[in-house]
View 1 (cartoon, helix red, strand yellow):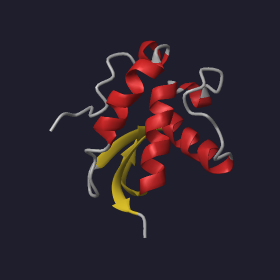
View 2: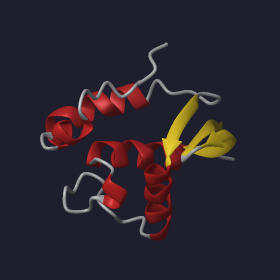
View 3: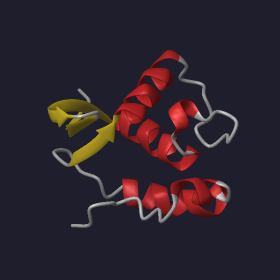
Length: 104
């Protein structure tokens, strides 16, 4: 299975044309299954906290720029967090590995 399921070559550049890429990202996300693992950096964790605090944030808004994470990546984190719980399985040096668990 591919290491980067989102198929984003350059997340920031792709985010400038998000409307033409979001369907591909969504399709890739729909293939994610419970138990899949995701590598998150500290910036991604900041994004998840911001999305919890302000659930009405438009993840594709270039002005949002949460934690320096590209909008299509914010979209993906938002999508995943609405469908899965993130169970930490390891981490080191600013990176965390989570296992995606079904929301009850």
